[in-house]
Length: 264
Image (cartoon, rainbow, N blue to C red; front, side, top):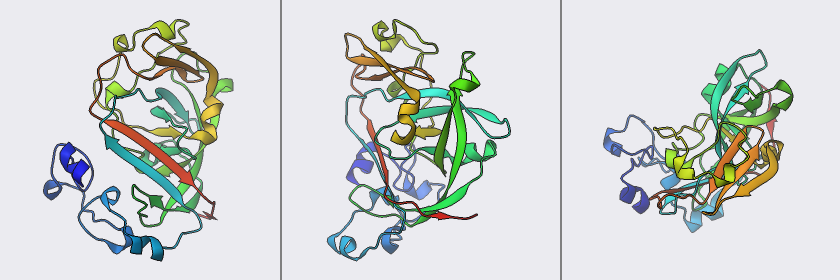
């Protein structure tokens, strides 16, 4: 609560610019029957809660945190997602080895015509609190570069869980990618790269289950400590930025313990 208050974000949706009393989201905390008007991430656990709760057959553990940091550049790149019937969409991808599974936004999955089976999951937030059990659909799609260099042979099949929102919007200062495979990417000043003017919405999160399907192994480091990482989706600038420190840092960690599919 203290961090949310200091950042001036809404207690219900964790977005800035308004207070909980004027939030459009009519939600209450559903962690262990709390029903208080705050986001599940703000629910604090107690020893009694830990002793009494039971685990479902399939558990997804996630952590999303904000705090002061040096604004390291995340591994974000624009790509193109393809559905089974030829539908496609340009998506913002976050590559994250801290996630055990991959995710795609539910509305993107629906636009691509993706179908699949449901899995029962529960979200574990900061402090060990468990959110209510949910059913998320596991879908399959192909992911390739968003450029003229894209070739069907270079696309990779991805299995992901469809979720309404992967994470909060990412400030453009936390992302930087190159539109082509620049051999001198590591010597390019990150601060000179073109960045979107608005915060990014993450459409696809590539977890460690598919991370190495896209990362090609070649990387370059420049004098400032930034790293240029070559992927099938294009070069990504990540790590330590050349610019001044940011007031915000983000961490996303996800873990799935077991699988329990339910037919549609």
